[in-house]
Length: 326
Image (cartoon, rainbow, N blue to C red; front, side):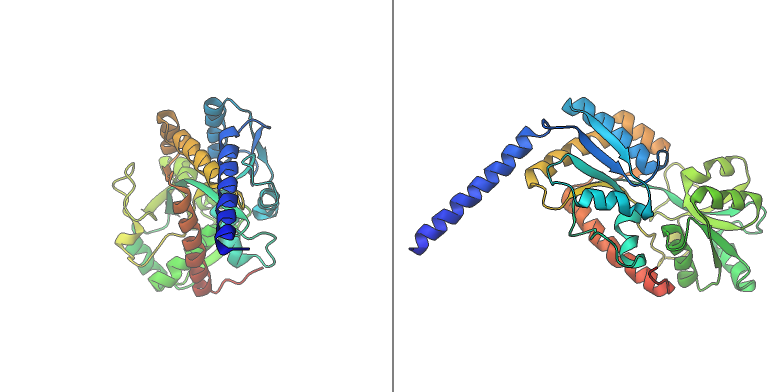
């Protein structure tokens, strides 16, 4: 067969495939309800965001959008379910860095590949996070905390939501970057750790500002610094950790939306546009910022790069901290 005829055939096949993908994006959503799978029980921020976006999609698309909570196995149940779904835009996951970044380095035999098995759609938002101490601890700044830790090596402990959690890694990152020794105390969830900080059973922890809001308002805890690169606009008097430790880089804590691998680009673009519109609507923005969540709302390409960079950076942090996969 002449090469020109082969090339013509390939071009025609690509055109058909492209038009099919375009047609699928044009037709979507008509076949069935859209399901957004959430890897945690109802209540946490990622569930809150998923339900907000679902309601906005219902309004803009005129289609049923279901939020399905599939908690368990550190998000592996929900993630595996979506990874195995058809790439037709009807099954999505409201993912977190805890389902798609840290497990790569912390869980042996992970049943899904966070990169190869998913299509990034939109990074939605990220909680503002800080270093909180019990109000009775005799330190009022990060430099004072570092000095106290160096004077009392091994005496300070910090809580987290579990071994290998992002808050555990933040504590080890502080030890490494500040040259101090604090001991990790794992809990089964952020709320339990925060209760013990308030009660004085542990002196400090890294936590989202929203989770510590009540204790901060009541004067039972003190916020020494936020971990964002710059000061938080709502709390301009609270310094950023980077002001004291320039090498400290907060591990990513984003919430975002992904679909199964190999979704048609036109469909991904349509979903991204709808989700960006949903997350940046004035009422949605007010609710998110009121919950101390910083909006990201970028492109699929930006989310893909963020995901890959975070996996690489988290791996370097875990290695430096000496944390091994379980």
